[in-house]
Image (cartoon, rainbow, N blue to C red; front, top):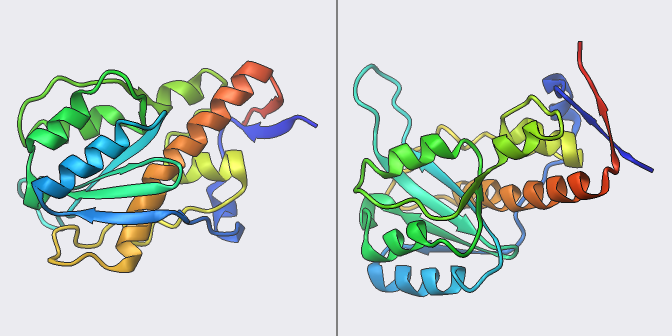
Length: 205
């Protein structure tokens, strides 16, 4: 049976869906030694999911800089605390890698924010926004895309929390890891749907 997907997903349905969370191991990276170990592991993988978090600004004024870069494989996620590391040599090596595909959403914004920390040459990144357009999906938010393709809910409750806190909460870690890991899940599902044609697109009015 072909999978039914929607060009635009009804946001009101998301709250009724079961919640999905990353179930793998999560490591917080604070030092350059830790970062090099993480990068060596990540660049040995076949595919990675990436996302960033920035402390929200509730008042007028300059935006905060990226506080967190989360990079996940299928079962491990590293949370690089950019407010401690900055654009360190290890992080730059990861971002400039041209071999391992790194999947994200709205990557133009993420790259722009990361380059505020220091210049680097963008490596091999694939934006889910380009992938979904190819099969007729118009939604561009991670939450709607995941609900549309998997019938599960990604909670955004921690999105506006303080990502520069001295210690991240368990909820923050899970939120960040889930967002990065979900990018892999979405990309693999979209690739399969495009290759097989096993979907029926319902166009919204």
